[in-house]
Length: 285
Image (cartoon, rainbow, N blue to C red; front, side, top):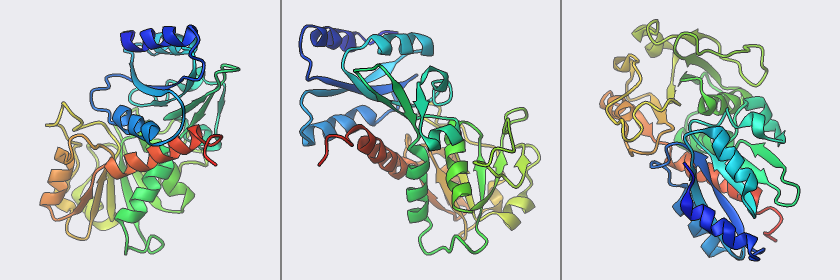
C-alpha cells in the first residue's frame, strides 16, 4: 500500500523544496500508533525548517523499503510491529545496541549518501520506565523478572535487564525460543513454554512479570497471555509494553490479584525522546 499523501509531498521536494525533511513510521497496521502526532508536535516546537512526519503503512516490507529508498529528503523513520527484526538486512549499519539486540526501532537516514543506520531505543526506554516503576525496590536484592515473548521488543527488554545484572526467565511458544542462547546480550536462566509454567514457580521465583507480546493490543483487546495469574499478589509488579488500550486484559488480570501495574506509554515516550535525540543531534546546540 503506497501512502498517497507522502507521494505527493515527495514530488514537491523533487521540484525544489530542498529544505524539507521527511520522517515517519514504518509498520503494518499503524492504526494503533501515537508516533505521528507526537513527532509532529515536537517538530512544531523546534526550529527544523519544513519537517513532516507521516505513517508509512506497508503490508509488504520490501515494497515499503523500495518506496522509502526513493523518497526525497528522508531523514529517518521509526520501525514498529512487525518489522523490527525484518528491517535489519536492508540497513547499511547498526548501533551497538541494535546489533546486540538484533532488532531496530529507529533508522537514521542520510539523504546525501542514502545510507541507513539502525538504532534501538526500546532498551533505554524500557530501562528508564522500569526503574521508575519499581522505585523503592532494590534491584540488586534478588529481583527476578519473568518475560513473556521473544520477539524484537522482548530482546530489547532482555538486553536492558542483562546489561544491568537483573535475573530473568523467558516464556515463549515452542519453537520460538532464542536462536542462539550463547549471545552475551541475553542470559535467561530458564526458558519455559506457556503450558509448563506452573503457579508455584511464578509465586516463588518472580517479583516482576513483563508482557512483550502483542496479545491484547487494540483491536484484539480480549486476548491475554496464558499464565497463572493467581500466583500474583500485592508484592508483585506487572509491566505491559502495550499502551493501546491503556489497560490490557493482561494488566486487568494482574491488578485483580493485587499486583501493581504499568502500561507501555511511559516507555514509549522515553524511547521516542531517545529517537528524537538521534535525529536532531546535529541540529540542537
